[in-house]
Amino acid sequence: MKMADGGFRPAYNLFVAASAKSQVIVDVAVTDRRNDTGMAQPMVTTILTRYGRAPRRLLVDTKAATADDIVALATRPEAPVVVYSPPPPDKEGASPATVRQRERKRAKEPPALKQWRARMASPEGQAVYARRGAIETVNGNLKNHGLRRFFLRGFAKIGCEALLHAIAHNLRRALDLGYVWA
Image 1 (spheres, rainbow, N blue to C red):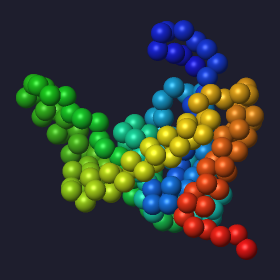
Image 2 (image 1 turned 135 degrees about the horizontal axis):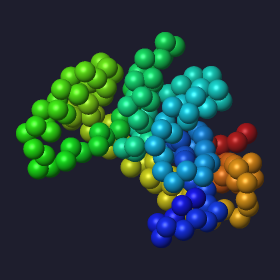
Image 3 (image 1 turned 90 degrees about the horizontal axis):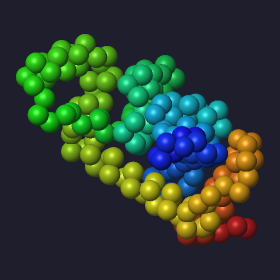
């Protein structure tokens, strides 16, 4: 993976899918990509395969769901997935010509993207997206319980290590939520 200093070193990126309400991890994905651009749709596909249904709504970082992902998830024939992800901010101080060009481009966008922009501009959309902070708590808990560095190398081994951390996290959450084993 390319690092911030310009060098290349072995590194992995871990993406966690969790329920915002219960903070239970439902999926983990390991990649050697530096950013999470375009990871939303593959994550939903994995969740669908594992659990037999896709989530009704998805709260993701700004770049995790690309425009193509948002359209594809919103137009799924089985059950659409409503994406909550803040649109990238418009550049301030843009010339009037640039603003007009942006508006013309957005007028030609698919209806799913227009609905997404309207949803994220609404107070209701902002309130739903604010729940994403619970997911950051999950990431913090994983780090606080030893997941700062992977000890193994290779996607299969890293995936196993990440799943073990997810299982341990989910067991701690079960105890916190008052689940009692018979």
